Image (tube, rainbow, N blue to C red):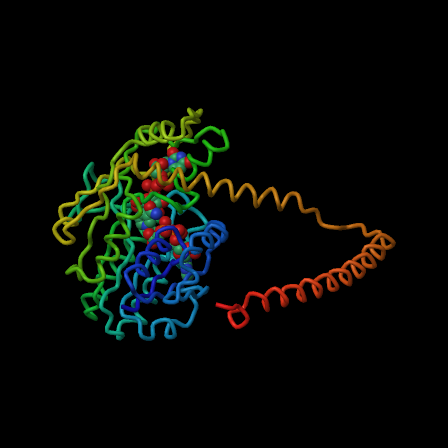
Length: 374
Ligand code: NAD
Ligand code: UGA
């Protein structure tokens, strides 16, 4: 299938691309490397797939680009591009949420409505629920608690509208706090691992007793890719149920894995943060025949191993940048001397290279099949 993946360079998107290519699909990724977090992390996410012959990447903004070219020949869309982050969605940055989560979703639906798509998979969020109960199921009356949740719910509603009026094959998947290698740097585990590695205290918002149904990224990817063919059109489905735990339980596991106990700074509860998310997976199991399987310890070991390498590479890049001083004062005499040295050095190198080439030719002649006697 020819699949368009929006947000292909992001945390979940890059895993989805890798999985689709492994399954033999042709993938077109679109991502504008939004400045919400560093481009360098997103570029690293794509290293394993960038040279794959069936992968193409377009670096452009879905809010403004001409969509017709990327939609041509597309059979399915996995729409992950968004402005994520629950706590940052208050205040003046809200326009970024409206543009990237609502406007972009509407544009994609509108422009692809006559494409005869096989599937339009929309990345929704457990944030649409708000604090409406301990266990969250799809038929509940919901009340988002953050501006982010409001925009993700608007995206879901748009998918349902286009399904009703244009028979578009949409499905909305509500992901629950996804974690694993490549996790976004604003998310709890990424920040905690980074702080443990830098021996800095962990910052806990509230009392740390909030519960999250942490869901390992490979389990989410499995459901996303199955949604391309499963009988799920018009549905809204929870994708969670991996490992519910309080934040303090999760940090205790991380400390055990890292072998380090770290100081904790307890800060004010953040606006928009819900008390508990726990997915009812009855519908997920019924429609997909599966549910997330990775337990929190296992998943955190993998994220910790990835974070150790990631933090090391980021620290190295920072120290190289700090060590390279811009040249402000040039000693002209020293410069002329080094240029002269350079010329002499180049001449000597060319002479040496010629000599080596001559020798190589001689050796080749001696050992080539034509000249070797059998
Ligand atoms: P991410 O920020 O790592 O990935 C999103 C990508 O979309 C980024 O690479 C960004 O550059 C790109 N993007 C944003 N606006 C764009 C635009 N206008 N044009 C082109 N590209 C654009 O986030 P993620 O954690 O991988 O989340 C992926 C999706 O899953 C989002 O829709 C998010 O709301 C949803 N989701 C994530 C989680 C989670 O725990 N990570 C949970 C629930 C839902
Ligand atoms: C996550 C993603 O960030 C959202 O994009 C996604 O839509 C949402 O999951 C979802 O499932 O709907 P969140 O649950 O807030 O949101 O995930 P984290 O950022 O990992 O935070 C988990 C908990 O840890 C929150 O209560 C948060 O306040 C807390 N936290 C986070 C801290 O105490 N300290 C930190 O440094 C970071």
